[in-house]
Length: 408
Image (cartoon, rainbow, N blue to C red; front, side, top):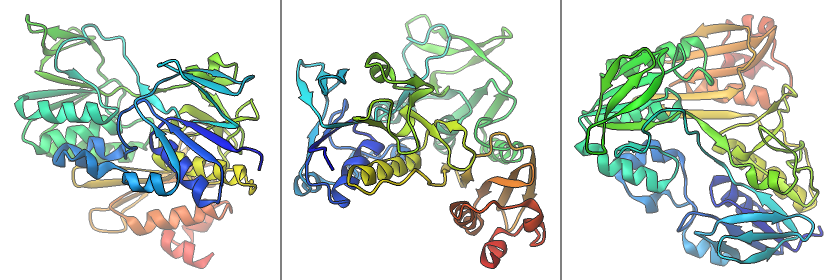
């Protein structure tokens, strides 16, 4: 172990886990966590769900101040890093400081994509990425009569569920032909579409917003679609995906494609710099394809891999990707990566539950579940074993993942 000072840029989930894991793995040197938001590191997944109901930001904190003091983790909050000098092994901040590092970890995350929609600057046109955004949404929601959600991905649909439960009229406008199309199968999209519609949400699929309508006083009055039709609404959430924060890395000369390029140890093209979480792309251990995952679990697993390497216990990243989304009374869980799948098998193992098994050829590549915890955990166990799961083998067990996992 040669690094005596590890500097982590980014105070989100991955940044916090990086610092915590270093101490857990026995790293004796200095740890500095630099984040651009004020306050303590906090959990982001509840921002589009539970926080909108309870509104208590302190409940989101990973740990109290005493944890950082006890573990000698220095926090530099509300500080923007503006430049990396790889040759001098320095970072520069917006307030003119220069900070030296022995090893640098980029946990810069991602930011909301800004779609080509006119009048995004109108009042009551909001986004959701951080605690300040969520607090603003929560404050404004009670006064809204009709909320328009532009984007039918996880964040948009999680917020739509909360708004609908608050007795607000909600319309979701999604350009793709189905909900959450980048993440789930057709069958799962249909299940969630039905559930949202049963809660009163109107979903407009295959529709793009060309511009927002000004109410004449600088506020939003609705959305104009690409086909010329209009939908009235006095509050708009823009939830059209994210882009990785990889500009610092690119300006420093690191290899960047869809995010910062890292190897299977999460090391960048510079031996003194690692990257993790939303901002990086890495070789998926199951498929070998390079992927970038927008997932707090991936960030956590990345942090573990880097920490082990920095404390003399290097092992290639091998975690099973898994994701979840709570939308109203439905809990979606996904294990594996379903992109590239060419066939699905659908089963309903429990009342109200749903399991979708996706195959690439004869090989199981992902399992999506709704309110079916046992099949989800069985899928994670099977994927973690690294032994390919053949469709023919599952068929012998009537595609019951729990029974199959017990037998192998």
